[in-house]
Length: 169
Image (cartoon, rainbow, N blue to C red; front, top):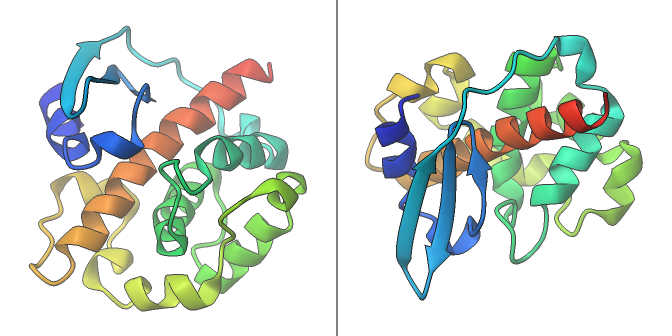
């Protein structure tokens, strides 16, 4: 995803993303809705084995809460897509929710993964599209809002996963 694509995608959620670092993009919200973007150095390559359950739990915990990006149960769809694509987790919604809720950090999640809340958006077309193809996906009018929220959260989660994996080395 290019710098401009990230900037455009994240422009929809500035109130949830204050201070977020996303790949090569840092986002800062200044006085109200003024958003400032900066480019950073390229991210480091991280082996899949570095994404342990502890790393995954810490990454979810960092984004989880009422005033944080992972503030709605249906946004776990984006988390599950990333876990499947990047970490080799099951792409089955119920199986992944169970595993997420079984993480040691899950006891501290304000927003829990609930299959019943993921089931609704999982019926939308974008949910069946491979995560690697989300960058080029054009959502329909009826799925646009849910897709954009999940896509923005997935980008944040990928970045947080990498940050946690690097910190645990």
